[in-house]
Image (cartoon, rainbow, N blue to C red; front, side, top):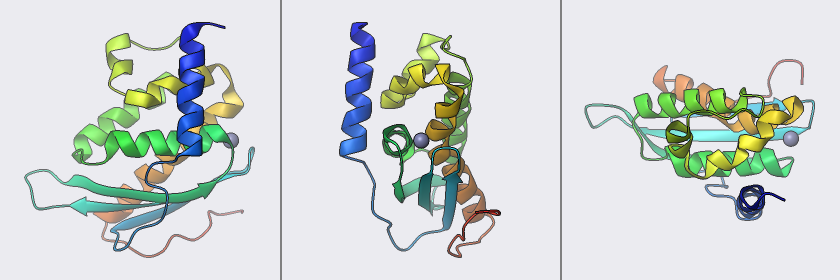
Length: 163
Ligand code: ZN
């Protein structure tokens, strides 16, 4: 096995076994619940915004979930990456991660990939379309929770339509 693949696999398993930010926190400004029906992964995620500065910041990300190692490790890696960042930077990282996941194993510019921290380890996932949904689930929940927080909607999130 390629030594990088093995390093990446260890990182993914480490996050899956010791998830960062797992355990829902109160209070929160926005909550989202996302399901990946093809794999059975679920993520409920809360964000708490800090609006005291010039730019709104993601003060806290907390979540709970269940599912495959990739889905759970991806949320954990994302939490480490985005917590404390302003929302413009969060959107920038989300765009880079989305491009990496849709690169079909080709990867992206290494300087950009390096901005993703541990989440770069999910690059290999982009070769498997079914697993891409697992890796993106937490990011979908983050985007939805931030949108709700910005709209002033801090109601608990129900299950998505059709579940
Ligand atoms: Zn999955």
